[in-house]
Image (tube, rainbow, N blue to C red; front, side, top):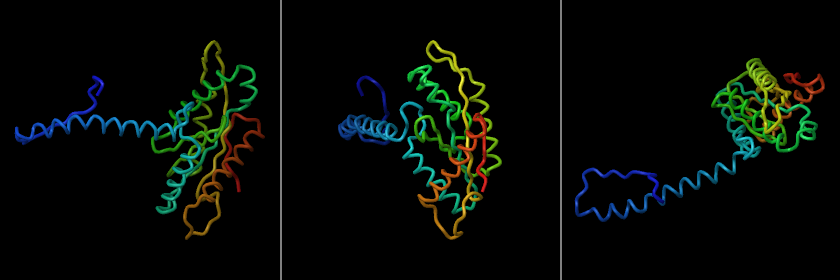
Length: 219
């Protein structure tokens, strides 16, 4: 396709009289492969944040709902981390939005490097990220949050002509210990939001205590 090899059609046991049929099939195959690749590109663009390369909020919520449903079905834990870049408005005012955007990208990369492949990372809005951590109880989630906090704090950011540092505050909530529910209930959007709110409350507590720290939700 356009002088690039994008696929290979192998025929075994074909008759020479059928050659023209396979020739037609071979000419159509690259078109179909290109359509599939285009669909995948469009789909990825719609679910991944262009700046930070993590899931957009809508898709994160869909994935989180799926993971929560699985956790309830098989009776295992799932934790949620809310991550916020400290004093980001002031940082933007000082260094400019271009530096701010690059900084968010660097923070997102630190988060992606710190989590497992099964964990779900999303940009919740502005300078705030959210992470769903399946099969992890609150204690282990706090350890993960601390690794992320420490990694961000230690990272020197060389952005354009600036060398800067930022810190993050992180709130942690966990299922099932942080929510009261009917044992027979199913995963719902309301329960998803409730868990995120618990992590968000813990995040605000982290900010109130001085920022650059990890706080777990306390009932």
